[in-house]
Length: 148
Image (cartoon, rainbow, N blue to C red; front, side):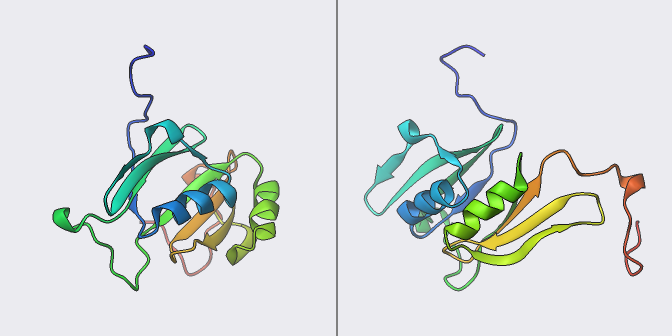
């Protein structure tokens, strides 16, 4: 890719946070994601930046009432699943940061290993071990779950 083009994947989700500085701190300190610091934008009453996770990218910004983008004040705005190379080390770090743990690391019927946390604004993050998810025909579905 030429050096003058923005390196971005095909999909870049956008997430709204009321406290952008708090979100940047939480995402980089607790989950060890990377901010594209040189591309952070600020304006009176708001701002935005981009966060890298492995080969993925997402945008975080303050709600923009002019564009009808305000999140409900008492509701989480998303659940985001992210893959990491070493789930156990990632979990140990997040736990040491005092994060609200929703589930300890556990194996799923799909073969994956995952843990769940809540961020400082109530949004849920699912952290999953890269390279463990099985093909659909290999899933060990619980008795109450059917395919189709």
